[in-house]
Length: 264
Image (cartoon, rainbow, N blue to C red; front, side, top):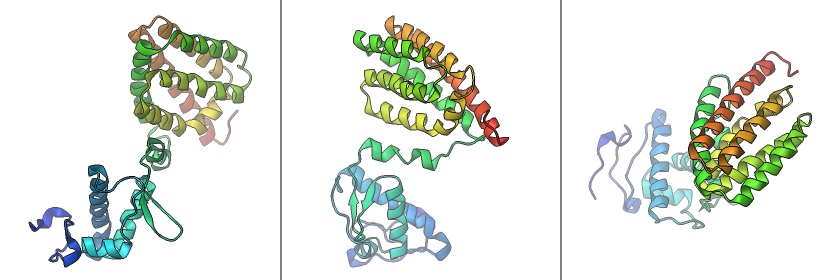
């Protein structure tokens, strides 16, 4: 086996043991353990991605992985914990590790915990949403059915009566955007868009209870539906982006109210 270079992770190298097999042999210095754990996690991810480890398959024990990769068991444990957070593996109560189903829901669910929304990144969240939702609008305009457009019009009509009902509006808002996502029939877009939607929900809840915000969203929704009904990608994308600009503005205002200790 070709010996790995010392630049692999900046750790002190040892000769591979018999159980090392295809794995790189590394022994971290105490203050380098995190970087070595990251390298171990990447090797495991590559095994999953290449199909050597498949969904539902049991991983070797921590002791076995330690021998195979020639690193300490705490390093293996740290790498596995990171992969568990990312949804790539799951642990049973007995300490056994399995490759997860790799379902997109599991893989993207941690996003809202890994990237909490705050005043420093709210702008970047809505930049991402503007780009993604604008693209979703353009794609949906070309694919959406007349029945789906009719359902969206019904929701907008219903929302006009929910201007004073923030809870009811939030429920209908999720349904509105999900119908547009469903028209795209793209599970990757679906999960990414829903994860970004969820990230700002705490502040959207406050914003939706602010006078005038729901009425603006209803107007935005009506413009989006007009674009979809015309099957006009540019018109729909522009309407979605304008909606995101309004959401960004009212979310920032809601964050300022929370920071000042009030939400009236």
